Amino acid sequence: MHCCPEHIFSLQRQLRQAKLAIAARLTDYLVVDCAFADEYDQNELYYERLQLKIHSCFTSLYRYHSPSFVILCNVYANEKAKSLRNSPYCHSTSLSYTDLFPREQLVYLSPDSPNVMSEYEHNVIYILGGIFQKTKTEQLTLEKAQSERIRHQSLPLQRYLKLSSNASSVLSLNQVYNILMTLKHTNNNWCEALKCIPERCRSR
Image (cartoon, rainbow, N blue to C red; front, side):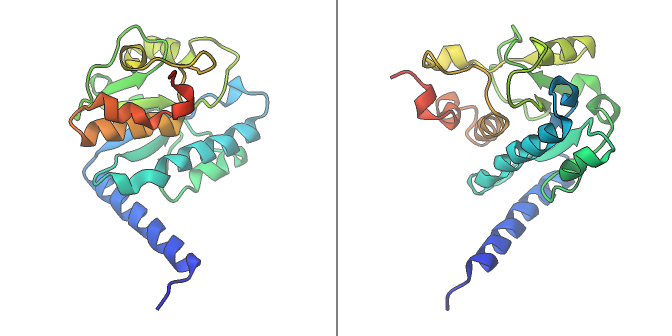
């Protein structure tokens, strides 16, 4: 007996949701900061593209037995952000992460931070900036973390990788999510985690 593609897709979706529901019950969270719509000329396009980036984080959940549950913070309560609020895989809120969690538990990951991350900390809630292309403001996530008095770190890309000349050190949301989940599940194996960066971006 063969399952039709719709049933297979539905089963895969249910499995992803079940894994994430367990993480939510265990308060194993990761935050995406969605406060950057004003950095883009078209707010609606920002939310649509951000939704695609966030959902791409969940396509590889089968690799991880305990993926972190994603909370979308600073989501505007308007029609433009409707696509983010209706996501089946994460929880969205107009509240800030500082309203939800103690500051000392938070770490904002920013490519501009001088503090290089050495290991995945299981008692930390990592924050990823909801950014998918160049913004109007430079060092946006670093400045935000500093103004909110939140610890910040950058990934040790230079230590483990030689990026190709046309590659950016600013990674996509799904790449950073998968790097963190791989570190979490491999006892901080950076060589394995950084394989989440496409080979075309790495210098041979």
